[in-house]
Length: 388
Image (cartoon, rainbow, N blue to C red):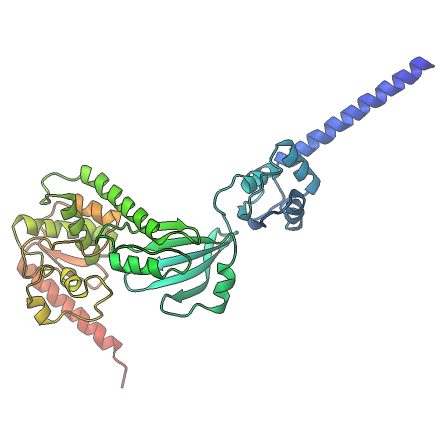
């Protein structure tokens, strides 16, 4: 009798252990296996949110199937107390293990809203963008210029604790334009300090946080530009008519202002390099304009004959060689073009009506290209005139 009872007890224990093993195995498969999401979603973890609150929110959004399995997996992997607040992109079919890793690894939010502050050549504007989880592309929901009053709904976005901030500086913006843009950014703090040297701020995209120091940000821009210039100077082509990296930076700024077509940069650089070698005056309008505006805004009109005739340090129609400083902040591509221009015989170029330029090796061909451009300009003016 006793032997029978013991045998039954052992059997029940074995069955129970097998059952527990089956449950654990099933839970593990559910924890590490593909999740139920059919398309990516954004999930927000509020500051101080508990594991239970987070697991409930994940289940309500259809991100996980079992709150309990998620919590047990978090505790077993010792990540239960490592949740980081923010908005995170949860990809399609993400496992609970993957989701837990996303919510605990830290770093910047990967989803939600972003305030994108753009410092351009002609304007400064602010965009509030929200990531569409399905396409993983940002969509603009608010936009306004620096000289416009912020819309009412901007404040609600700016008050979000996990809001991401990004500042983008366009190629060809002057140091004053960038300095002024940084000064006007409401989400930055501190004095911007002295105006940085022209050409020494790297046009790029900078991730920042609310309350970041203005002077520190400008210093980072300068550090990046110094590194870019130093790197590209070391790998420069042989025989260039530059004595210093500063000369190359001046040339790069002229190239940057003369063309917005990426494939043309090295050709434009070759024209000016060829002229320096001859020697022949550069004769480029952007340098004259910089001498007038000092980089503090846009001229907004054509150059006058008196301005083209005036002898100034930046009037390359009247001086030999390069102007004394860069005339804008060139991007990496323009610096690379100045330090490795195409090998051409071009000495002239003019707009061709397509957004690019027609290049010529002699004055006769150039004059024909100019005449054609004048015809295109006349046609465009005629098309823009209202019909009587």
